[in-house]
Amino acid sequence: MTKITYYPSTNFNERMPEGTGPVKIDILVIHYTGMIPENSALDWLCNPESNVSAHYLIDEKGIIFNLVPVLMRAWHAGESYWRGATDINSRSIGIELVNPGHDFGYRDFSLNQVNSLIYLAKIILSQYPIPPRNVLGHSDISPARKIDPGERFPWKQLAKEGIGLWPNKKRSNNTEPSNKQVISMLKSYGYDTENNSLSDLVTAFQRHFRPERCDGIVDKETQVQLENLIFSVAE
Image 1 (cartoon, rainbow, N blue to C red):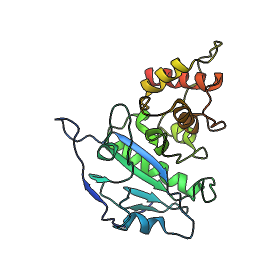
Image 2: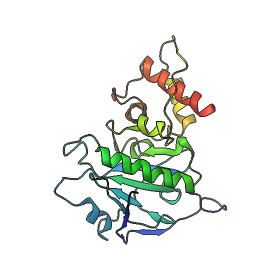
Image 3: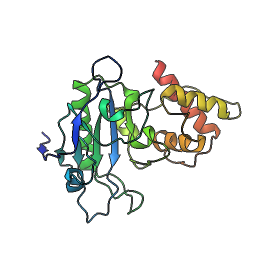
């Protein structure tokens, strides 16, 4: 059994309800640390001066660290949006994966790291009502600001384990790509189409669901992938 090590951070506060209802925990957000390898992401997420944290961090050996109690509000999402919600920190659980990221030598996530993430995510999903479409990367909720966990993250593998969604290839479309239709579908799925450019939105979608091409261009294959994703949600 994978061990979870408690390594407390002081960077958290109370979750805040949206509206008059109770606090909801219905989003899971996955990040990479994006730091120079010699620097300690673990210590940074626990440093009061950083003003950032996550509920969990998984290092490249697959060791899981619990930094913030899940019932508390960790500071990992920043300015973000998903399906009408803007205080994502209050309704989400954040998991950081140690990886230098695009600025410092982005690389594949290790086998041990991915296996530990699958183990941890399954525990979280068994305890909280997080729908598959709410298992997200930081880039999904902040398309203009963030690109993590990036195109090397194994979203398709996680979906096969019941963690998140992956489009089922059931439909094809012979029509020319339509920006208007793509924006409508991205909004329907949950993206913030009011405050992000089409290019940023499409790139974020591609990083998650079409990682072999992350250029922000609405081509036929990207539109078909999005249509199949919407079709998967409706099933």
